[in-house]
Length: 342
Image (cartoon, rainbow, N blue to C red):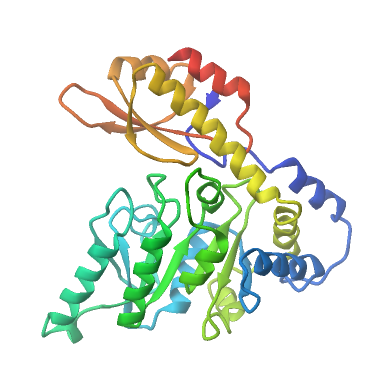
């Protein structure tokens, strides 16, 4: 049975595995102090057009979100997020466990809008009792969002301006960043993300690595002691070269974008087929996540043959929203099979 419910169901891209196998019996220093990790860091800084950036590698997304936010926030600060944000909904209170409140505002298509962010901050400081409240010390956004939607450069610039006005940090969760960068029509690039964000990470786990995320701090004052903070959070990988080798491969000969573009292209094939068959697109996503409205009876039939995400009933006619997700490994035969079922 073909599965379209996630983008990290497979292992790793063959070129990643080849590099891991080729270097497997080499003896290298631990904790990311090896030449492969150093090479990966330089390639990432070049791709971000940010030569003074600090780059670190962690294993997974939740681990990365928690460690980065804990490093950016003072003990009395929280983080502002859309209510649909991953740190608010799907990370089991991991950020709160570090003592930092996740402060939410209603999302707009899965995003933290500059208008709502500014309104919240204005209202916060207009409250005479604001010193009794949790101060937002950072904004959390993800690109793509949980709904596959993307920020524009103008939105990033506005969020940056709000952060500057109120003394906040801007942190971008890039678990699926490759799919956002590969989307048609986007005006956001890695250098632009580095320009506007204090910190972000380049996702590997969901893009074709066995595991791994690359954290980038773009400002001089941030990330200086992040290695120690990684250790404090139990997030330091002793065989750190396993992360370095994978990201060195990602940023050699354009592999990261090649992988991402393939997944997006397969998602667009699926979207066109659904639309041609008369299904309604629920959310306009240009990424590897696609959302459709489908009748309950048709969904029941579909789920006997493939796996998709059922996001539940949305109206009195028992129509459901489903999420169909592609990955670096989604084969033409799988897409053809799904299309035939429609």
